Length: 112
Length: 115
Image (cartoon, rainbow over all chains, first blue to last red; front, side, top):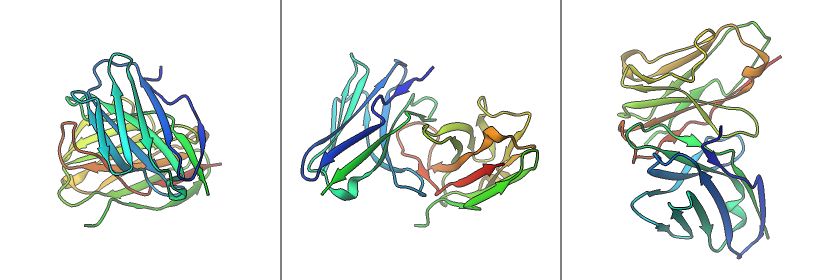
């Protein structure tokens, strides 16, 4: 039973446009959400996070939106760049536990 | 600041053989994790250490997998005997504290192929 779901295995976007990656979760105990980016043959690298007390967090070109009532979060990348091409993982945790539950990932391809 | 180090980067073994992976976390990080990432899936937690104590090993197949973190620094993960379904990337991660809120830093992983 997947507690964190990324239903789109892949996404292709033109350079300069917006990339929107989606994530749904089922466990209402989750109160901290993160996005990780992974290049081939490397470990995941932290990108951006959001606490459940917020509905938006922004860091440069990256913005994460959280809709608690829908148990849904999204990552917006504006503008998208070819270097953003990677697999993006959504992860969630209950702060009392600290371990992360990951989705299956979405492969983003940004075309020049 | 040096990142999380893992070795070896790649390992090929035959089923029923044993294998060990090593991880050196970021200096000063008390919490260490081992994840298994099967192709096409997200990382799945195997075991979590706080210093040299086990916090969560509920998803570790204890009949064949074992892990230790002696002296609360380096850690080793062992598989004995290996099965075909153990083919995966094994990721080590570390974090400075136990509670959520601080991101985890991942090593490059060890890609294990069991033939």
